[in-house]
Image (cartoon, rainbow, N blue to C red; front, side, top):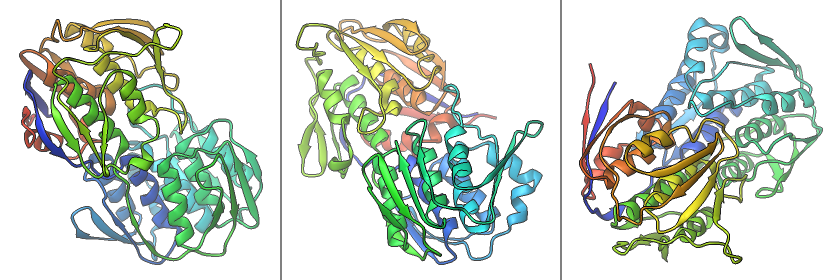
Length: 438
């Protein structure tokens, strides 16, 4: 188990380029299973979760070539479907939450899809009902082996239908869309997720020959086609990483430029950071954050009531940045309530911030009140363990702003979502060292 040693309290300066989007990559990589023709994907992030999925696709028989930094070609013309029922697959699949999205493409193209109960972050329940209810609506038969925690869906031919999703699940919508593109007839998905990454998937599928309309809205209409072809695709920059760097700049009073951010796909992210007093300046397609030497002040609502920062389905504020916002608020001027609606364990990392000197009242599993220090009292370095990807990078940001030296264990959680994060932070002046474990 590797560890980060961080010497905090240093101002950073320079430019940082966001990686390709992790959450988009997990969808797009699964979509290569929908065709026997070659697909090229660029700007793939070199992170643990994505590399695990690429390795899983290779074991499934996808021909994969690395044709440049972050660029791969995929050809799924001779798959080993027996791998799906092997003990090896049961072990490989359960270590990665994104593996659930291979089920839709396999069901659509081969009439069957299997998956062990996926793992991933320890942030609370992430149920799969939306995925499988969608497949059942399309005509698939569902089975679940409770002993092996193994799911399966099978169908001779999927048939288009109308469905109202019980929640606007991003991965659920992606999985159902990938199944529906090869179904017979028309599928209408209402209460569909409409995140930019889901839009990217739909645009890619349309280039492959799919007929999806309503892209960007919460109602998708899909006319099934007989087969799909190859295409080229480039990932968007990772909006969660962009938000992380905005928070890092504010907490460390650093002047940073985040380059090539795809402003049109950031939604509420710049506005939410502005509400807590951070200057987020648009310079072309870059974000410029000046050094906040005088701190940053939380804006109350018009009637004077305390600001609440909450997550919501797109175009609301992404839940993946709630941990970052909470951490940045610990040094704001003023107070705010953070309401994390989706996962009941995502705020359970705040005890580590309290150990560092933050003033946080955890009201319940979903809400915390943060009383900012306004930099009059700095956080103190400590030893901690990263519980999940986003909490891990939040603790890293706190450590970089803190007085003294901090140690973060279990940094594999951070590596799951952030590419070469220690190298990239050192390039802008951070004092961070990776110590490999035994």
